[in-house]
Length: 198
Image (cartoon, rainbow, N blue to C red; front, top):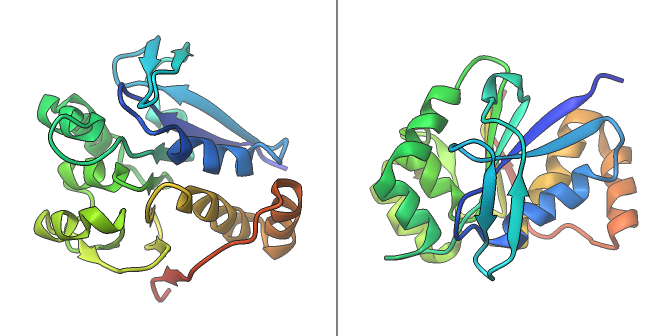
């Protein structure tokens, strides 16, 4: 089976559960390889709770099948707010778009994709406190746990990252693979997956 490359985008203030959830799902399978990356290249990232994560890989979205963008709080001074103001990460995400790559976001990570101009006019979701902000930034907000619009897959707040991961596994490898991950993680999916008509 071909290896699937997932790049999890980290930055200072990133919310741990937003990326740990889907990575835990992907980690069930030997053929899914997750790599931590930052737009600034290898460095140490300090998460929202103060954990330090050493990122060793270079920024290389051209070698990813999935670029996973976790959230980092909401409002002035949050990790997401600071990255939007800085501008480097939204620009890099906009440049990462290409045929064959899926951009996936958990929680307020969708606002980073919105700042990159990726969600404009497209079905998407985020944490419930940020839905109006996402709408104001041009997203076609769907109030669902996971929203799948082909090469853009977004999910609601925090723990919905687990459900995004499980949905992605089902979409790519089928329901038996998703059921296996559910059993391993002792997690039953919640909510509805809204999927664009093919």
